[in-house]
Length: 265
Image (tube, rainbow, N blue to C red; front, side, top):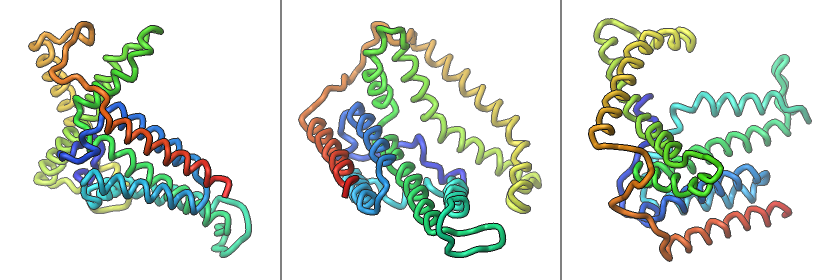
């Protein structure tokens, strides 16, 4: 299960999406999320699905790899679907004791479940096609205008990128700890959901110790390289907008326009 989490991972490639400016990809992701929360018809969801399918195909990241990231969140998706299908009032289609499935609930459950799935897959494209260092530079560049009001752009970008970068590392460490404790007789698979969750508590202490150790090693490595923050910091590769970035941004805006236009159909 832990190995199925793809958040924060980078999938190497040389596709058109991989080569885009990170600022464009970050802004495009925000526009995609905004558009996703505006859709409320089957036609609009169809356009979102077509757009996402094209992006995945162009990125050349295997669809199976992206769908694998849904497995750890399957409980949340099912819970969201169940809450909407049983808690939405309206025309009753089927009654199972106090629980009632309504026509409006079916539509709401479908839309909310689809929205959550498309949100997870669409957002993962950003981290899967962008190197952590490029993601840091992109976030910092976008936050630079806010420096005038005291926003620490570089520090915020660095913290967010380190957090994303260390998610796969901590998951791998958790997997190793689980295997070590299973070799000593620990059981993480049997029992109901609450019993399995309780069995994971002994993992917390060694996991926290490992996280603090890695944080200390990272701090020492940064100090050894004379890291002093974003002031007067130079980069080997400066990011710059190119023609393909402008084309990609126009395409994303056309997608948003189509979603808004079809809202009235």
